[in-house]
Length: 184
Image 1 (cartoon, rainbow, N blue to C red):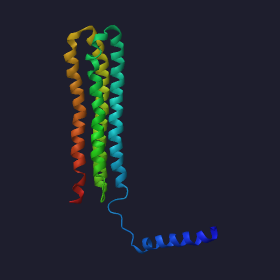
Image 2: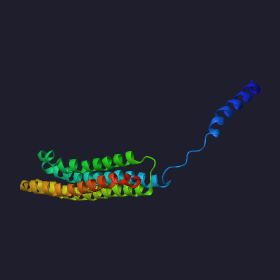
Image 3: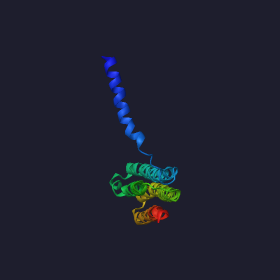
Image 4: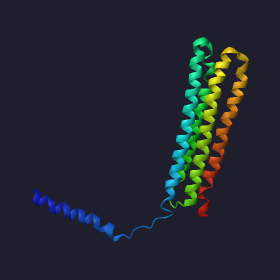
């Protein structure tokens, strides 16, 4: 039985391989290493933004837990820094999706470098904002438990820290949109 099937399988393999060998190979369009930089930009946007969001959430959460022991009625009011830190991860996700959609052949080094710059601009600014939100959120919710008049000031500082990540998102979108300009 095996002697009978082996020649049939070999003939089928040759029949399938023959048309592929007759077709000429398609030349690669664009630069072969450019996609590496593009995907690195998408990954760095998401990783750095989520690292900032995680740090801001953790640091603010420690302050909320510490404050909640003394003033449990203020816990829900003090959740604002955690929410603002979580938004930073969404910024990185937006840029990562924009970059990933833009990686299509032909893809040149200019495109890869533009996507890498977009990812780093968004990711690193979101990480910095997450650190600021975490530190301000931790100290702010503890201070708010002792002096309720500090709440508005804490919110304003958190808004300005969040704006840093928003600047990186805007620059990242502009850089990612310039990636296709090398083909024109």
